[in-house]
Image (tube, rainbow, N blue to C red; front, side):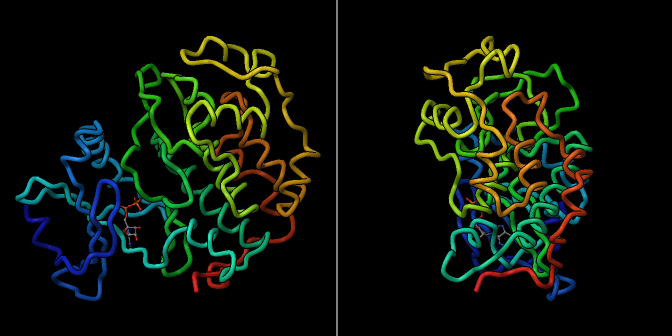
Amino acid sequence: EEEKHKYVKGKKLGEGTYANVYLGHLVTSPSTLVAIKKIKIQAAYTEGLAPDAIRELKHLQELSHPNIISLLSVFSSKDQNLNLVLEYLPLGDLEMLIKDTEGVRYGAADIKAWMGMLGRGVWWCHENFVLHRDIKPNNLLIAADGEVKLADFGLARSFSDPYRIMTSNVITRWYRPPELLFGAKHYSGAVDIWSVGLVFAELIIRTPYIAGDTEVHQISLICQAIGTPSEDVWPGVSKLPEYTVPEPVTPVRGKDHYLATFGTAGNEGVDVLMGMLVLDPRKRITAREILEHSWWSSDPKPTKNQDLPRKG
Ligand code: ADP
């Protein structure tokens, strides 16, 4: 109850679908800036998000890692709104950098640095049995020191109980893996890895790689870009509740195709990307395997934080 008196709310920083975000600072230390995210509880409730969000937020407070946004405090205000006090991340997000093709130039070493930070953040979530479930460039915020941080844990939840039935209506469509598009009710950290793969691809080509207008369109684009999910490459897929794929079946793309499109990432970077975009979630690379990959020790070395490109 005294949590809300520890912070002073300042100017509005931005507005999202479910929240208004304000700049704030500690009463006792005006130079300690924070972001106060005021969740529009009504909007969240009608979308069915609020009960889960509130429950899960509590354990996100314990998820402390340099590549995960810190949740400093949670309190409700008198208007019944939920207020999240978050680490203030002033340098925007990866989407802004990707889109600013005129103003921001970056190369293989920069992409490797960003992917390393993203990989470590996701690894820490999964190590602690938390799925993020909404990884996309606009949820990867940049700190003053250049560190990329996973943010927007509104949809995150624990997967400590593997038999718990989960909703498949998560993850923004373009970053949503095939198992969710087919309505899987039991899923794993592999859902986040698929999204990470699409962020990696987008960092390279600077445009969303698989941008469907509808779920059906998204599946057909996945079949074209990656290959058709079939029993041959993914045993059991045809038994998923909403399994449908267009005819004819397209073979899974080989390394030559990835090298032609994503060659900037280098030979080993392309291996990592292909591992992330494996159709069968059980065969997809894990966060731990990503961090152990030889890509990190091959040239170029990841750019140091202080030398990373920033928005102009
Ligand atoms: P959305 O994800 O729909 O963009 P959010 O509610 O997450 O909406 O955030 C709205 C805006 O507030 C963001 O675009 C960003 O400009 C700002 N913002 C959010 N979180 C922070 C933060 N931790 N530090 C600084 N600015 C933030």
